[in-house]
Every structure is written in structure tokens, then in C-alpha cells.
Length: 569
Image (cartoon, rainbow, N blue to C red; front, side, top):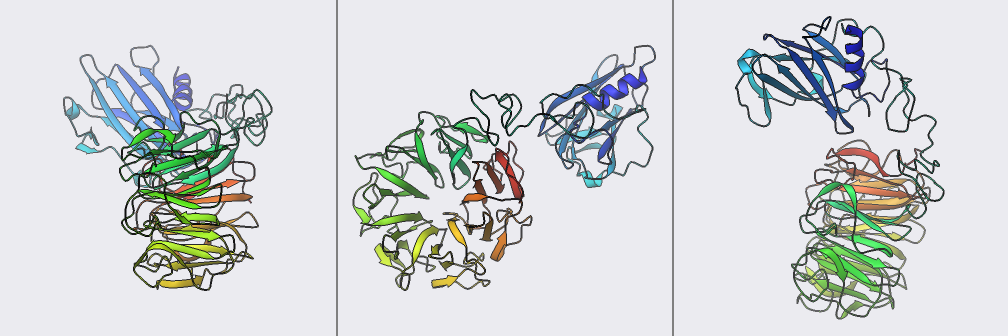
């Protein structure tokens, strides 16, 4: 009975992807100064479903207090774990809750005492009761004492009961591997994830039409378009910017209703727009400034067309305003215009597309309150707020486009909160504007109204900057990603949160074809996502509002897979 209990508790109550015999573990020691008739131990994590182990002390030969149960992580050696221990007496029950984390490569002890003094004690929601009274539920894993004993007393063998390996994300046969024999990249019955079946073939973890064709990052949300034209978004949804018909934020992708032929998606601070294969533009989210282009100033959590008969090949969104390139290569902007960011020669706001800001454009970018466009002749023109030199002009603002002097070889442009960067023919990159977070990438901290070269970048084929944030990223012709600027949330992807005034390599990526930088504040926070040649997506940086799509809200300073599997170089 004792061995049965131990193995059931260790395998059922534990979270065990890493296998049966490794150093990373938490030994849970349960004791009480009460006479208990039963103990239930519930264990869960952000990456595993809850499980339970129970001990009925009234059964003959049952284990006695103290109980020692071994917990192993099922989804990474630093997995966060939630433990609830409930004890039953003849007349009442008592509960103790703990939230902690496995310490990679270490065996730690978590002692839980069901204390008599806690009966009828009510603690705050963030606290729990033990022998010392109310205390915080959260115990940092590093503060747990090392387990210095031998194998936990109720475990005579490995902390796992071998069974047939099935595709479920778990190490069922206790061989330190999960789902071996199931190729999630090609298995049509388990394509990309266990249980996700295809009607056709599975390639790179995607069923036909599911691979990601384009990504966009907003203030605190992210959206993608699939090859089949569907659109999904995740993250902050305060104003309905996820397009799901409600205001529920989420850290998991949700499908945008009513769009089945999307071609490109753009994400702003609080609104989103999609252009479909016919060129029709539909927007949703915050419409208080007219940024949805519907002739009104109301919010809408569902997609609806922009007014007018023009078609769009691309759209860029800044906080409270939108700009798009039409099928005839004109730039039209609508929404807020206090700084002249619509480029129409005045500061009058517009709730629908009207006068063209400039003609002959091949690329357009929107910052916090400015915008820029690359023209067919490779000149660069900007308009709007210029308080930090972000339009390259002489005045503090310009309500009409102004040519950036000396730039005759631009092929792509990106606009951040108060800075602008562009790619030159040949792959060099230059930036101008504010430099308080190193967003010019030139190794310094001095702002510049004239373009300065970004250091060590000569192979850029794509560029993105956070329109409301302070970092920028490029994709090199080699498929690698470099980022610079603010990094308070780890959005540069180099495994640190140290700001970078020179480009750093975003680690663990290869074959990248698009990068998207997002952020909603000028404090150096933000997030970034990348798409590779197979249509897989990885994200990193701030996750406080679910914008990474990782099913949790944990900040990442290294890329983590969201859709598909991003290969390492």
C-alpha cells in the first residue's frame, strides 16, 4: 500500500515531463499537529492540468504522517507549481496553499504543516496560514531549503509509473522523453500539437492553410494572418482590438470573426486593421478618434469596412490614427491629427480616409504622432510631430510631408514612438529622432534630426519599430534577427533586460523572414515576434497583458514558440 501510494502520488500529483530520475525536484513534506482522517494533495502548473493524490488514514496499512512525496516538472525545469494540501479531521477541514517554482538542477524541500492554530483563520487572498500565522502564498523556489535526505520515504523506485507512450505532452513511459514516436511536424493526426488532425498532409507542424503568412504587433496585442486568410489575435483587448466581438483579453490566440480572406494585418496601440485579398480594409478596436475609418468615433470589437471605394495594399497604425497605401500608391490617413500626423496640411481630425498625404508610395510607417513613406524614387518623406527630430525636418511639426534630406536610396521604413529608421539599398540601416533608449542603434545616447547609421547592420531585408515604444528590429538576409533600443521587458531577445544602443542578436532563431516590434509606452518595455520561412511564429518580451500568446503572463527575454516550432540555428 505504501509503495502504491507513493508512486501514485509522485506520478499523479506531480508534473513530470523531464522524466523519472533527475535532480530537479521538490520533495513535499506534509505534516500536522492534528489527528487527520484524510489528506488530499492537489498539484498544478501553468503548463499542466491539475492532478490529485489522496491518503485515507482509516485504511489498513495506510501511510502515516509525515508524508513525503516527490514532485517533478512536466514542462521545463523551472516550471511554476501550485500546491494545495487539504486535511480532514473528524469535525472540520483545513487547507494550506503554496505557489513556488522548481529550481533547475536542484532538489528542494517544501514543508507544509496543517496547523491547529489555522482552524477558522481567514487570511487575505494572497496569503495562507501555517504555524506562524498568515504568510504569503508565494515562496520563491530558491528560498526552499535543499533536500538533504535520501529518496523520499514513500518512494522505493522512480517517481513515475511507466505506461504506453501516447501523444499528450507527457513522459508516459518514464524515459525522460515526451511524445517520442510522434512527429508533430509531419503527423497528420497530431499536427503541431497532440490531437490536432489534418484533412490533408501536415508540413512543419501546420495543416494546409494554417501556416502563418504575416504577423503584426501592437501596443500590447499581436495578430497573425494564415495562408488561408483567417486572422487570429491575442493580448490586451480593452477596446476590442482583438476583433472577437467582446472585450476579453487573452494570452491564447483567438480567431477574428468575419474575416476569411485576409491578406495583411496591422496592429496599433488600441486598434487593428486587416486588408483582404480584394484590397478591402476592415478595422476594429478603439474608434474614439476616428481611427477605424467608419465615419464615426465609436469603439467596435467586431470588424467592419473602412468607408470609401479605395483598395489598400498595406496599412500602418499609430496610436489613434491609421495610414494606408492604396492600390494606386497614394497614402491616405485618418484618425487623430493634433500633430499633423495625417499629412493633409492641417491638424483637423478625420474619421474616414480623405485627402492623400502623398502619392507614389511603396512603403508607409506610423509612429506615435508622426508618419513616413518611401516613394518609388527611393526618397523618404515624413510628417507630423518632430519634437525629437523624428521627421527629419527643421520645424517642431509639419502637417504636410517633408523630404528627409540626403536620403535617395530608401527601400523600407519603420517608425517608433519618437524616432524613425529605414533600410537603404544594399541592406544598411539608418535612424533619426530621439535616442534616450538607444533607439537609433548608433552606440550613443544623443538624439539626431539627421540620419545616423545603425552599427554593424549591412544585410537588412526587413525592419520594424514599435510605433508607441522604443525599440526596433531588422531581419538580415541570413535569416537572423538584430534588435536595439529599450529592453526593460527583454524585447531585444538576447536573454537579458539590458538596453542596447547597438544591435544585439535575438537568440534561438533561424530562417526568419519577418519581424514585428510592439510596445505601448516610452519606458523601454515592449514585445517582439518573428515569423520563419515555414510559417512558424516565436515571440518574446513583455507578457503582462498576454501579448506573447504563450498561454501565460510570464515575461520572456528569449524567443518562445507561439505557433508551430521555431528551429534553432
